[in-house]
Length: 119
Image 1 (cartoon, one colour):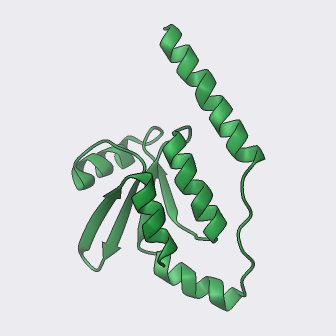
Image 2: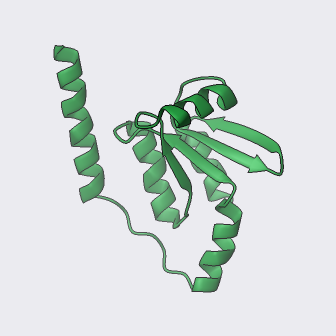
């Protein structure tokens, strides 16, 4: 019980700090953003709102100005099942990369960030 309360309290602090200190994305032309959106259209980030490693990835996504589909596995049983069935384990953050029927599940926040920086 005490652990649950503490975890919820810390989670709320993580969420609040992220909102207050959220980075700004770059300024691009509509054409440049559309080209980048085309590159990220096949990506889905599985996450939990208060997970510090997910916050790390989300902040980099915002800093890079990427539009990536996000799925909160704590709020959606379907998304949790997709992560477990597709990726093979319940670990977030996880980036699902779909390249025309060749799906890769990328775990670890640093690996995800490095992949996104290469886009």
